[in-house]
Picture (cartoon, one colour):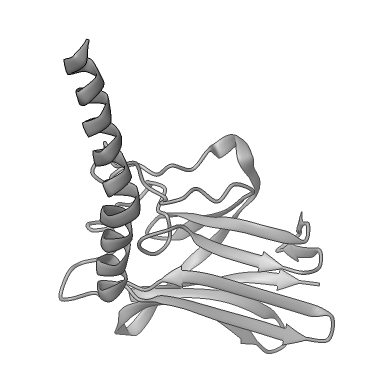
Length: 186
């Protein structure tokens, strides 16, 4: 009985150390290699923001190798990328209510599927899979759209998300030699 009591105390201390020391340390270390970025867009009544972690190419082949084709990607590094809108918008022709969503993608050579999910999991991948499987719950997807993949003329070293505003507002994602543009309409 005494052994069990000490075992439980040691277990509680180890779990507390992980959550209060180990986990914050891991987050800090991963953010050094893939810095967190936030981009915003504000015009007329539209207020959008995206928060993501930006990994680097470092000589690797990204799409098709590091990020496999036809597999769901958390779209960045570390925590899942989040997309926030203060007003209802349309992604292509699908309604996306005001709110904050996790943004997931399924890259293909010719097109990508982009998913807006109402859950924002803490990390984005499962630890037991070694990061190979996402923690996205597909039943919580609000919308899914497909957009064409474009080849860039020169490789982009760091994963980048931004807004392009012209005749059409786009959410752009690009890295390595690939770019996608997701149309956003008020």
